[in-house]
Image (tube, rainbow, N blue to C red):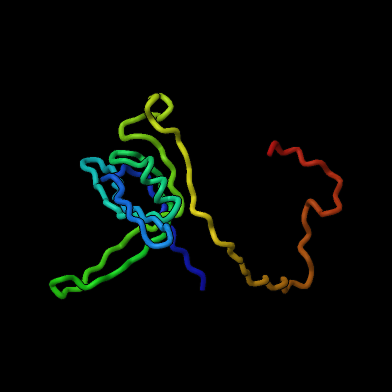
Length: 161
């Protein structure tokens, strides 16, 4: 059975990205993203932990700052570790594969502010994916149903779409 692990968020960055360099020149950036849902009498803010690797980490280091509004697309991951107190800790993170810069918090458009960065989109290069589908069975009916527009009809379709 097929499955899907995809997250799409638009929100405001909660803190400047923390960037770490690893062996082989691999970079990792981590930051938080706040998404706010409005209700009639209140609002609910959710905080998400975002992880960006390689080129996306470089993008985060250069352009993303606290308060920036961004679009993030990625997948959910959960990891665990044993703390110093011996307790098992868990965290859920979003590993980004696309980040789009939308502007700063409170900006109606980045184009109106000469100091704001332009809207840009960056994606992690995707590995080639193969798609498999199950062939559909042939219809079991004995005679095809008659249709007002047969395949060999020469009538012109006058619909505007």
